[in-house]
Length: 109
Length: 116
Image (cartoon, rainbow over all chains, first blue to last red; front, side, top):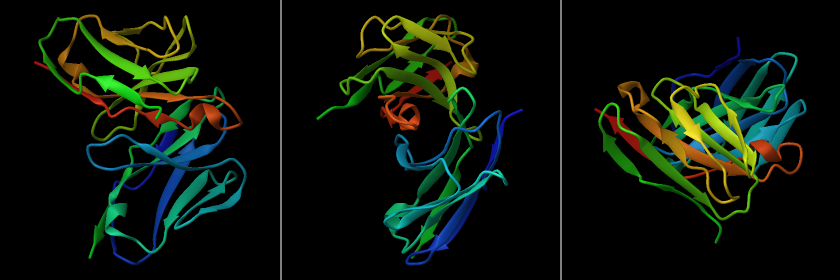
């Protein structure tokens, strides 16, 4: 079967760095996507990785290792507004997104 | 500004009733999707469309139907609502261009449906 695993909840301190991991087992791979979802709101696109390595976008970076079926989202200089759920999703062989259940990130002052 | 709107935002209905959730986008996107989101689960795909008159079943399509008569709209119909269909429903669209284009989704604000 297809499976995306990510931690249910993480806590971090304002100004710090946090890494949210995502492991996947899917039938085929056509990209890994990260979305942010604030409570009660819609998901919004953050980043995607197709090739191995690190993609940097301001305070957010995403890493992919296809051989290990592993990705992480790195958030630097955490701000209170970063409190949200972070959704990992993989596009399978049919380019359909398979979604993880999301990681709820709590930022403390 | 282009947008994607869902209505109603909140709906309470009774078991057995037919319910339609509307989704309207002004991005001129070819691809449109309906997902449901439940606690402890990832987003689950209900139906999707890659263009006018094209519709496809997703992972959890039983009890749901869609139709695509124009580019802008993809209404989702629950033929006979069941309590198991209580959920938050998200509509999304994408322009499908580029390698990842099909999966860089723009979501509507969601419709919370309660079936009693």
